[in-house]
Image (tube, rainbow, N blue to C red; front, side, top):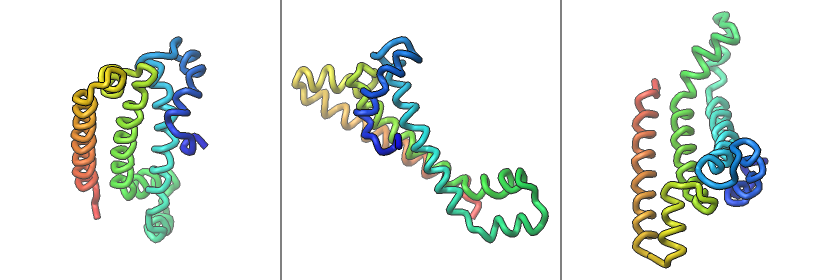
Length: 156
């Protein structure tokens, strides 16, 4: 359900929860509540899909040799799903970068807050363009690092 709600609406809807947890509805601390609520189900779905993509034959082979459920999880599922999980972490971090830029609307700090306060509100296109370039570079660095790590942990 949470994944169906656009982040900007979720951000506003969770302001009472942020106030309850963080004691404030503005600033980075309040925005982190909404970021966490948005990221957890997103990442959980990616991990679930990574685990579902594992070949059933591998699991059946582990059962056939007498592996316990814990051994199947530890020695089969997690190693087989590692590249997908790493890609999921990468995608989640990139989504959090995008979400945190939107969190600038409630004073969440960071590049989004800079773009809103000094770019949009002051009609300064240079600041807006600079923040867009910074965000593009940041996302590309995260993606390249995630792809590299996923290749390193892939045992296939």
